[in-house]
Length: 433
Image (cartoon, rainbow, N blue to C red; front, top):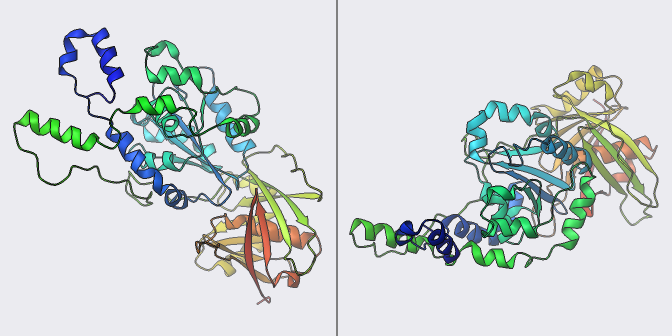
């Protein structure tokens, strides 16, 4: 089964006796991906990608010269850079690894290798998980010579090659052509400028030649494959049209093929905040930039407003000694969030605030004078709820309170800015118990 006549040409050259058995039948995987692209925004929402956020997908095929298997330690550097350089609220990170990596090393070993990155927000897509939906939702792919990276380029997604063993490929193949045309990752140089350049230089038709070579019958593989199979069996085809099951929005749950539920960032988070002077009737506005899992002090964003910094630490942080760093202690989905926040302030007397995320768009924060502040995002213009991590709301409140400004000034609302996106919040204040 071949997806394009150029493969038949190469087959005739490599193994002439096999050429007569070849059937041109398109590519069912590519067809399902093409059919999924119109649902990109729904996939992004299901993955928790918020407005203004970019989804970067780390992809590796298997083998010693893949991105995952490369012997030059590119992957450890890349994982560290993804965490250290990319702000939590402006970049979402997923990893799609070839099933042979999972089965060759074992799921426990793979998760152990990637545990620190996962604690800092990297989502690992299971080996039978919805990788096509993740690919359809992606803003960029950092990959190698595997088919997933090729599919990304063929569907117009920016691609950065972290590994590419040209010696392992037929130089006449479309994948080899990808290696000659796609930009290469420069290891040990700052990653964020490389991503900025990737986005700035990319054009959706950049890989039009590769798109044309992905399949000679886009959208028709189900029909061609069924016709071939029934012909081999000597049976008449069903009257109903042939089709491939459509790809649904990524689901969460206990099914091993489902994405794990989006977990909170457990690594300590260094937070930069800027209070932007907005005169009434404009709402107060606070810019928040968060970096997870690093002791490196991030550079403050360029702005005419002074920046301040604090550290937010989840109470379930794997290394409990890191809680001593916390100015703001966090938790998620406690059955009694107000009581938890009160108890957390007693447990961690060095911290100034305790915040519990109670919903995907809300949190409650206990401030030093005992009052409880509830921050809830207003729905967007499209009616969808805000997808920004509510822990960022708590950091904005921390910055406001630490500046000495009265909480009552927020009762008309608050705007939290992450990247280029503004999140409008409703604020309520409950007196101490």
